[in-house]
Amino acid sequence: MSNWMLERTAQRLEAQRNAAEADVVALRAKVAELELALSVNPNSRWNAERDALKARVAQLEEALRHIEEGSGPFNRDQLTFASNCIDNMKARARAALATKEGA
Image 1 (cartoon, rainbow, N blue to C red):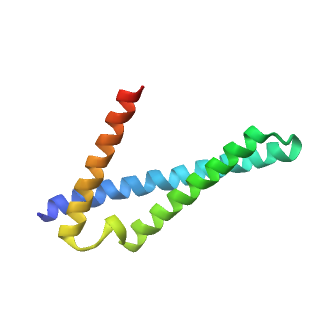
Image 2 (image 1 turned 60 degrees about the horizontal axis):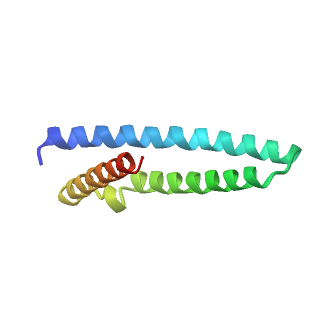
C-alpha cells in the first residue's frame, strides 16, 4: 500500500474519530437533558430513551478507545489495517443498503 493511500485512509479515520467524538458529546447532552426531565416528571418512555442513549455513548467511547490504541480493526500493521478498512467499508455499504431496502 502506498504512503499516499495510507495517508488518505488515516485522514478518513481521523474524520470518523472526530464525528464519533461529536456524537458522544451530543449524546451526553441529550442524556443530561433527559435526566433533568426525569427529575421533574418521571416517565418510563424517557427512562428507556435515556438508557438507550447511555448504551450508545458507551459503544462510541469503546470505539474511540480502539482507535486511540490502534487496536482491533485499527491495528497498526499496514496489511491488517488495510484489510480491516476494506472490511469496514463493505460492512457500512451492506448496512446502508439494508437500511435503504428496509425503508
